[in-house]
Length: 260
Image (tube, rainbow, N blue to C red):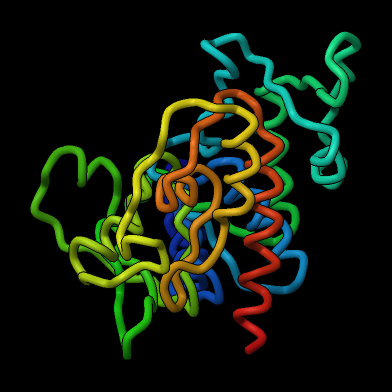
């Protein structure tokens, strides 16, 4: 066998084995942003079989570009323990008490590496086009390649079965929207549906990102900006303490759910 064939066959075989191994999960996480990556890390550390499905080529969500392509972001002091768990560096802001700055590229790559090192798997360029529903609860994902979706090709998808699903798709809350629009479920919000994200208010948005993290339908959780959009919280821009803490909180909630 030529070197070219060896390379191709090994890649096909190894990826196929990885995908087959993760067609049945304890927790399927949708969106490779900071909150989902943190959740994946803490879940995998507890032995949960978890995979992240990210639509884009590079996981990391909105972290890479920092604020308006200035690749620095801020976190608050009460989120530093999470950065320490990922061995991500940060610096105290001397003229802003309680705030720390860090390189957004290191943060994005550090969160990705930390999730993988803990035992989570990440499948990039994979889009979720529907949910699996069984017996009145969310039971998995319907997936396809992102290029297939974007080109509008008529190609049937595959399924991933999971005990629970986490919507970490950010501002659009895409998985929650599928649940509401296609399955016609009533979410545990005041309106029973997605309430919609409010404009920027940093202090409120940071607090509500954590407060709104949770289970909104049996087996269906939301974290990060997705949770804020579902519950009608404010946005907060390139400050990430709330996002990190949301990921840690939802990991704890999912662990409790799986232990029931």
